[in-house]
Length: 410
Ligand SMILES: Nc1ncnc2c1ncn2[C@@H]1O[C@H](COP(=O)(O)OP(=O)(O)OP(=O)(O)O)[C@@H](O)[C@H]1O
Image (cartoon, rainbow, N blue to C red):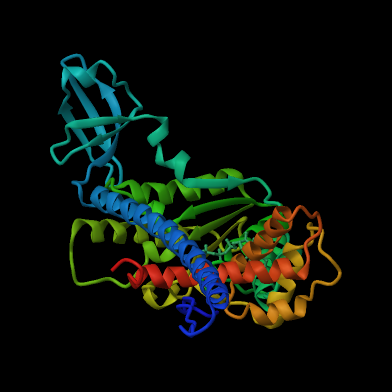
């Protein structure tokens, strides 16, 4: 993709002062028109850059807020076991199952009852009662009975589909094959590769094919600010899978809980470590030929703690790369299947032009091309629409570079 910003040249015209007045006036008009044209182009670029800056500002604010949340002091999650007569309650802390008798402020005592999930501080004083909204279990899992994605919706990674079918689908569909041969199927499958290349789709397609429930959890969700929450979520995840089996557990961004350990020993690190240990112990505990399969995904293979790749853990690694030329063509065909596209659209040319694009980016290219057709009041998308969409995407991309380099904002 070309990334250099194309800033129009300053218009220049030599006007001979000795020309007759009418010719000089004509030349000046021409020069003026050039200036107006360049001015328009620059204004448009400026507008795009400002739009981009606004988006980046929003993103920076969001990251700052998240950072603040993470820095604020941690609370522990506990369940209220019993409310006693003398304004005391017994709470059981998640993670270590420690039971504690603690005083409660009258303000909270009126609202609290046995079974409530609460957040407690270091001295076990109840700080908040967690309502259904903050119940992380409900919030952080995505559960789909039988996802609609099929292998036919995935382009350019046939070899990866074959490997996933062998490692995940076959043990679910034909466990007797493994019994007969006397081997254990892979415990967990790790898909790794750049963002937007179809890793989630692959996991969903296996669930579709095997009529399994798809249960997705993002690694970042497991790294919450409540101590004990991560390991509890992991337990919930496996419990949910047992309730709904056959099930595919999909842990996206596994690097969030399984990065190489640093030397620092902050409580945050220890919490992440505990969450990972919980995941490994759940994996050790389940039957490899059973009805639950586990798939994880990461864009940061280089950062992974090798401990999770040992036999019996994520022992089948499948790389999902960016699509090659043929792959891009297939993905383009898939994402334009439901669109009304002119016969003159040359997919071969488009797949040449999209080198470096991920599946997700090709999907937005198709949508963007459709938008150009709508803007032009047509109901059929033509080759020119795709070229304009390409140009727009590349411009957006280069304005990324412009804004991050501060080019326009000096
Ligand atoms: N190989 C592909 N074939 C068809 N569509 C694809 C492909 N890869 C990505 N897409 C499109 O991009 C979207 C995002 O893909 P998906 O979520 O599977 O990527 P991912 O690899 O899991 O990304 P991430 O690492 O960011 O989670 C999909 O919904 C799909 O529309």
